Image (tube, rainbow, N blue to C red; front, side, top):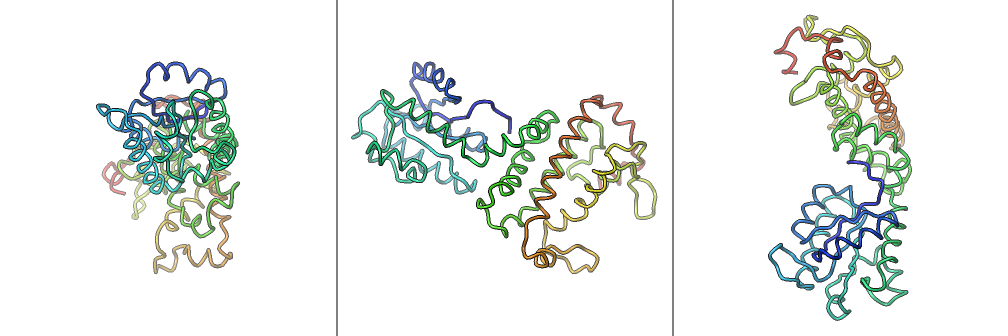
Length: 346
């Protein structure tokens, strides 16, 4: 996810005069209103960049489809139903608000009580479940800003600002950005998830590692592994070790150490533990066993949390290395593929 200096608000509003003027004041209060003329368009943006949005503002009398007529009952019914369904899929709800120029009789009955989870104090104080364009806009902006300021996701983005900027600079996939957020939030906000559920997120750790290695491949630091990244081989090459076949013949030879020794040692541990911890325990005696290990440490989450923090160091190191070594062809001189067929087969 791209880093934004302003709080991002998904806004459904079909009055173009309003979409040109309202964002000016909102920006002064730290918000960027991103308008969409109908719910169909807004829904696409919501699903495509769910983690971007801190709030949703719906103009009550808006359009469901581009060709629809303004109809508060139909529009709000469809929009609020979709917001709830998407929230269930994503595992969290984005606060939504109704901002309208109409009167109470046009909108109130169409607004469900889901909003009471984050906006009940407004209803208690003002005895209404919507915000008026004429009198309540500034208050709505301030309330969105406050709600965003206590959002765990935005606080994590601020705490680890340099790490997330490094992810963008290294062109690491947005999936890694989102996965790292999901892993960092429970470290600082432990009430956000149960220990058991957190220990089920080793796949997210694997995703972060794979996307870092994919990025390295695009800059020539590692070979192109094809559809599936070879984590073991990647860690070996970065540590100035050859990647070999079972018969000890080389598949890819390394010509230089890339990772510092400290990170190389940590990387080997993560590569040996994370992949098997993503799956059910096997019956092979030499394999690490997640269930057995987790039980032995009273179901603690410290192992995965420690890997998560090490990812942050790895990403910051990678950004600095890439700044000093931006040339893809020069980077690719640090390794040589000896067996192309085996390279993509693994």
